[in-house]
Amino acid sequence: MTITVALVTGLSLSTVPAQAEPEDVATIADEQAALAQDLGTVAADEGLTLEEATARYGWQEDFVTFANHLQDTYPDEYAGAAVTDDGAAWVAFKGTPPAEAFARASGVPAGVRVIADRGFSEAELNRTLTDTYYGIRARTDLVADTGGDYDVETGVVTIEVQPQAGLTAAARQHLKGDLQPVPVPGSPIQIDVNVVDQVEQATEAYVRGGGYLDLPDDGICTTAFTVKLRDGGYGVSTAEHCGRGQTLRYLNHGSSAYTTIKWKGGNENIFGDFAWYTRGSYTAARTYFWDYNKTRYVDQVKRPVKGIKIANFGRTTGSKHAKVYKVNICSGVACGLTAMTKAGTRGGDSGGPWYWGGTAYGIHRGRKKMGGTWRAVFTPALALAQTENPVYER
Image (tube, rainbow, N blue to C red; front, top):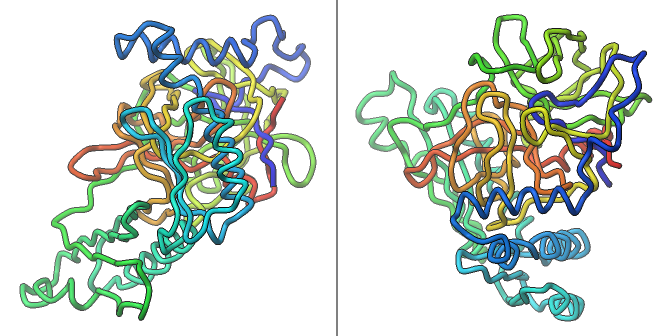
């Protein structure tokens, strides 16, 4: 299902009082200008010229469209895609790639390597991860916390397990064996259960910042996108852990005025960490803040692909960017998340938008330590389609 939301940075929605006119189009960057802004930011941060940044990252939206199409069309065969550190790109399949993959690959400016015979699909990897993850997480007699991900190239699923504090030394010693699932005969997918002292991860809801969603307990968050609600009308999305059934205050940048928004529903489970709220007394705009007091339209919604560069806005840390590290990871109670190559986010950024140009990519959740590095983690914006409350696009 196509998502229709309007990304809204710092506060999920860029709205104005109902009696006022909506934001003037003249204040909104069009799709090409939005892309140029993001490329300019990357160029400055990485010490590149704009031409070099465009050559390195300017084609990635074409690649994401290509990869998303193949994943949607051939879900049982699609085995992942990525942009590599050297700027190349690949897409893989469980068995023989469809002819369309080769035909469309040539249409991506950077060219795409098509890989055959991985032996597993990404859908199978993700099912194995989530089935194993929630099965282990349910062992509350042994397990205090969990994290999980998979390697789309090797087919290895990894589950991190933090033991319960009261376990005996003998129980801890045998924990890995007790939780290791029985291998499925003939399956190329491997599962590794790793016992660690602590699963390091955190959501980012209750830290003071410069503000847009104010929580009843004095916590703060950021909103992501405006949405078309299933029951009619419009609302706004953020992270479920920010509110969980509560009534929140929404504020625009640089304003002490607010409207009260009410929780309509949400998930913090296998589908990710996201919720949707009413719009209060404000008008829901099809725009989002991509930086402080700077707005742009959402033109489309896409699924993230490993290795692409995207950006995030949070009320505490503003606008910054990173590359996609892994898709479909698990953190705490939530799965279906995307992890980035670095963090850069802090408390109060939860619920904020992940974007590139005019494309909506995700709703920020928090941070997780993976491979010894703290990494930002978000829910793909397409998860909103599972609720039939799609992103509000232009």
